[in-house]
Image (cartoon, rainbow, N blue to C red):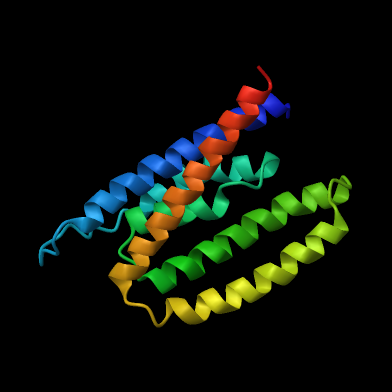
Amino acid sequence: MSAGSQNLLNAILGAILVSTASWQLAYSIRPLKANRDTRDRSPLLSWLMFPVGAEVGFSSAGAGALGSAALLSLTPLAPAQIVGTDIAFGFAVSLIGSGAHWFSHATNPELLMQLIAGGIFGAISGTLLSTRIPRRPLRFALWVWLLILGGQFIFNSYHVWAATR
């Protein structure tokens, strides 16, 4: 994949994250209603995750973020369940993508060990916190995090694009 294509993909991913997070943040600020629509729209997940899985094959960006966004939007799951489900999804999809890259020798073992060390500590900390924080504040924090992440993708894509002009 060329650098230009990767940059475009990151910009699109960022725009999707920013728009989804913005919509959900606006939705979550509304007052709680007893009859709020909490339909389970999980049958849509397979169709939405197909392009995410394909994207992970050529760029690791987005599987967790888009998976979380889809689960937060389409299911009535508790945040701890969303995080656990999304981690399992990300693991399975990344295992397939990383296996292909490992066998093609497209990895850096030193950086991989640093990522794993930080990731394990973060996963343990996040798991412990997700079971203790109430649903609404945790969902709000996840949407804010996805908004920041999407903004970072857009910002970096713009700077890469501007540097090549």
